[in-house]
Length: 247
Length: 197
Ligand SMILES: [Zn+2]
Image (cartoon, rainbow over all chains, first blue to last red; front, side, top):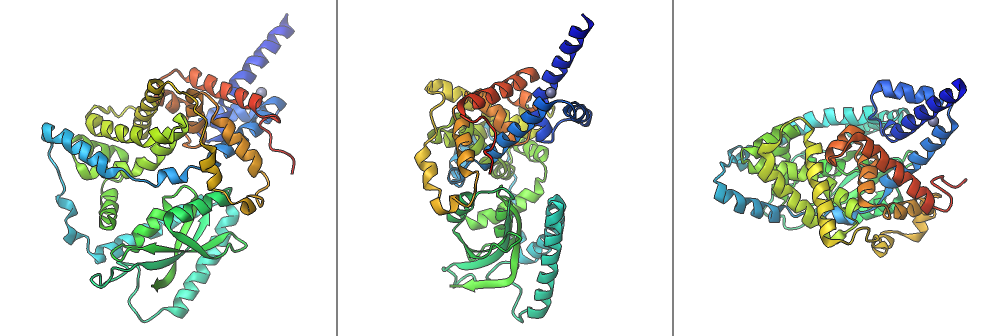
């Protein structure tokens, strides 16, 4: 009788632990529950097998491809719909803070540098140990390269062309990109096609690609970089210092 | 368009966090709305597509979701995260639309996927085939189960958050995940184990 109770109790512990394993894997389980899971897994082969299974599921979900679908943008449609809605509701609009005068390139540089430092730090800290050393090494190289080859022309970080009048043509920017660790090449390819970018070098042994992409004459480099950083497949983006290829 | 994106960057830093942006949207701020739109559009499109498996419906559903966000921003109570609130709207719209079309579990257009692949590049990744099998098997799950799987493994939500998004008890979330796993095991000949290299 006592033995049966014991088994029943173990079974129910197993069931409740196994049920939360997916969230142990995705890192959202509260610490206390994590400890319970870890303790239970020391002795439960079934849960360990379930872990592998769920990790495979996670990988499959994360590798799924529908990049093409997400590149389209329906903002204008939605805006006209909400405009219709708000014209009847007479909602106050506050657009004054976005006057074009305030978007000076000076502001952009400052903002860019501030963002850049904190962004790199966050990216850096999010990298696994091995990556950090690679990044440190590469950053040192970049700094060195920057010191040695700083061109006498204006820095191109800001608005990538000062003379926008003559610019109906497009410019290319080169950047170094590290993709997420388990990304498939077909996803990278898909991304490149959609973003009108191409690989000009790499991957290096540490997985760094040099990409060249098009940006419009009045676009700020920071925006190009930020757009790339926002992509789920991309871990790390850094401009190749001052290289702007004009067509 | 490009200039607009630049403005977007400015506005984005102005409405740094979601609650601030949503608060501004509630007051009728169009720029704040654009920020939220850009912040969520891609995530939502993917989520809705993964839940519905309908490329033809995903965009329309997400547009509807964003219009609801605009209209109902003032009703957001702040008890859940903004993202949970928005994903909840998207989930319910997706399920409702599916029901209206009553064509649940339409298989994924595999031709479209094939187009995106290069055979020679694929070979470099040993588990590509297995991974693709698993992916296409995921598309055969019922939408409610698939949503739980996606919200867990792609969007990284906790199970209480998922319960809030799909409006059901936490135990139902766990049960849906459990059934999803069992179904995958049935559908894949070798189970959900990666083949030995
Ligand atoms: Zn167990």
